[in-house]
Amino acid sequence: MGGALSIASGVLIPEVDAVVAFYGVPPQELADPTQTRAPVQAHFGELDNFVGFSDITAAKALEEKLKSSGLPHEVHIYPGSGHAFMNRSAEGIKRRKEMGLNDEDEAAVDLAWSRFNSWMSQYLSV
Image (cartoon, rainbow, N blue to C red):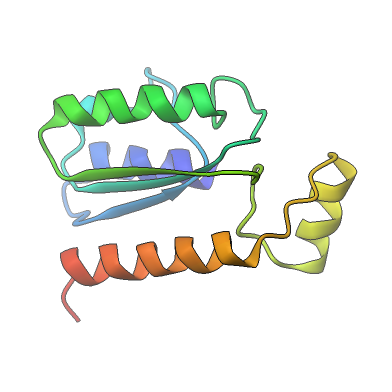
């Protein structure tokens, strides 16, 4: 939901200067990513199984749509990671394990944070 809403914000809210989305693509009827008004960086887990929302097929389709937007974009797919891999809370880890995801890859989390920080530093002024 958060990633999809982030992308939708980049389409629907003119004041948004940059978007970083973690796992999720809005439905076409809510917001067409080709119409984004802000640069978009998106992060997905390779093992995410929310078909049509945040799975690898949805991630690749988003990347194709963003190419036609003409704005800067990046789509990152993290091997061996599932949905919500950035949620390092005890509850988040427990939930993913219950889903069969043993994706405690701190290197992927660190890389995603690094990419997030770089993206926001590039497009937002303090």
